[in-house]
Length: 399
Image (cartoon, helix red, strand yellow):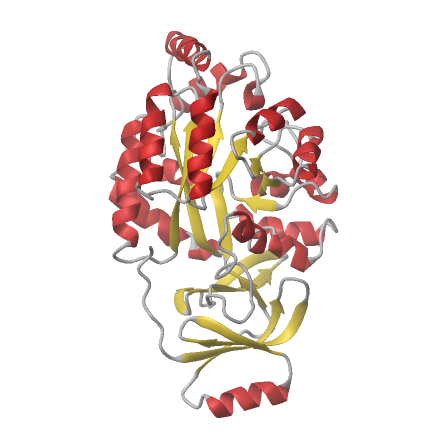
């Protein structure tokens, strides 16, 4: 549980375009003790509230947008904070603190740090995973700027890691679980040689070394015990932890992953797979960088096409936190989605998918006052104020 400074005073954010779940209205957001008390849309209701809260603080939105704080369910950018270049490692505690400081700037108030337990890919091994989970757990019990959560990404071919995943579930140390299969020949690495090229480019390993990684992956994947993975999925479900699949490339893969208790499909490779997942009631998550750039970096499904087709429900930053807010407004500017719909993809929908929508993800009475005030400069959205639980954690003062 995050340690947040408790707010005991009243606050009124006035004069903004407030983005509610289904509409945008002009008015004010009333906050009491870090919780949204109401949305006031008339001068009379604002005056009445102020009369009843004479000691309230007053924050002028100045006609800017007031959005729920963004909820990012998949972001592995923390890995780059630890290792910005191959073989260049920085301390975990420094990396977490410095990475967290960037998040309110991008409007992100809840971050599911995506920590991978796998082999051959970046920092995705036991040492980094265990160290960072311990670091986040310790840190958020003492102080936090944002709500730091843990998304455990388990590479199914990492056979020795299965017991560790089960232990983390039993110890209630993770908040979201996904099953990954980055083995060559399917998913993200369907094209022959694509896995090898990726690892060599990003990790600075030799052809011989990557050959050993590939052979080990193939051997281990043949030994995967899918019944044990089903057990992990059931265990997560019993604890209210959402389970996701990753890089699904066919209807058969959706069928197979459904048996693992999957309720979220991250980054489907093609439109057909996204449609199959959506038809089964699985929430489809696509990447904000894909929306911003207009193309998948792996030449797979265009996220905007999936959103326009109604088969994508959640936006995440994937590897680039600043893209999340930008993607929301690009969807609106390009006519792909109306503002409330686009905002829901990075607020209410991820909250619903992860079972936290009873207190996060929307501007309605009773929800935590995780809010961002957003301006636009030459069309680009800029966060000028970020509140978490009613506490201002970021302010941008213009010259």
